[in-house]
Image 1 (cartoon, rainbow, N blue to C red):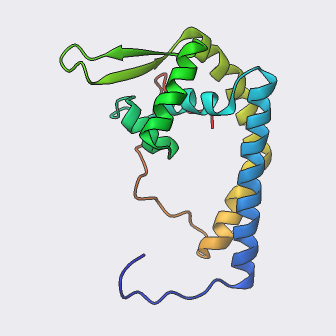
Image 2 (image 1 turned 180 degrees about the vertical axis):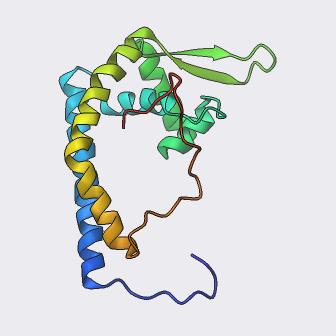
Amino acid sequence: MSKGKIVRPLSEPEYLALGEFRYQLRRFLRNMEEAARLLGANPQQYQLILAIKGLPRDMEPTITNLAERMQLNHNSMVELADRCEEHKLLRRTRSATDRRQVSLSITPEGEALLRRLGVAARQELSDTGPILVQAILGLTGDGRIRESKTETRPRTGGTRKSAQ
């Protein structure tokens, strides 16, 4: 929020749009959590391998970067990476130049899980996506979705596409 900017309260339709957005977002996330469990995966483990796959190309898949992307503290991210490694969803690789620097990469088992859940995510978004967009447009009020400060450049091909 900018300093000195007058902030007007939300209108009734904006509250409705915000409520609908939150509901549809949570519904999407819950459905994806259930889909992960049906495949025998822990939802947070799926989210971590998705975060690795969906990283902007200029970001290294380090514990620090992934903790930020998943909004977890460093220790929680280390524990989650440990569990993913135990389930053979990812592997750690130490930097040859700085042994403290560890990079995470997805194993073939992790890729297989992403493929299966990616299809589920796309299907779920085909159902809920338009409702989410309408809620955002109803909340912004001007018919445009505003760019976020952390937005990354659009992807053109490559193998690091996000399913969620």
